[in-house]
Length: 131
Image 1 (cartoon, rainbow, N blue to C red):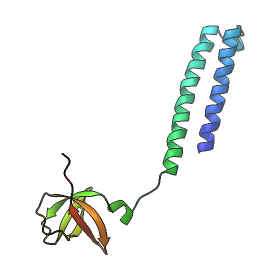
Image 2 (cartoon, one colour; image 1 turned 45 degrees about the vertical axis):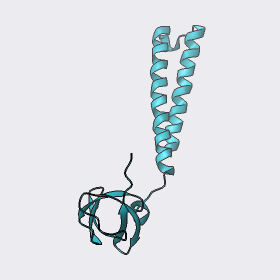
Image 3 (spheres, helix red, strand yellow; image 1 turned 90 degrees about the vertical axis):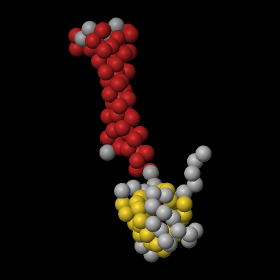
Image 4 (spheres, one colour; image 1 turned 135 degrees about the horizontal axis):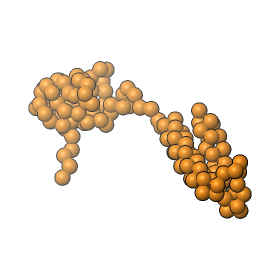
């Protein structure tokens, strides 16, 4: 897919370049007026720019490291939904998780950060508040 986007962008740029060159020299292709050639070249350059942008976004997404499971949870922030004494429940990104804390009890509605994972329990600590 990326190769096709690059190929299409290249073809559009070459055609636009030929149209601009022809308009500058005064050559009319297929009886087109110079103003029409310039306008068509502008449109082709805009379409080529959009194609190059799509190519960039696709390559960037393809090279992005996927984080799932334990790696995605450690470091994320959530909110206590059931008091942690020391076990309870927290919510992270719309999901409810069983959690435990080793820093003492935490009441409901406290922001927490995941430190590690023990089995299916998340080990959390109170999140540092921004000043």
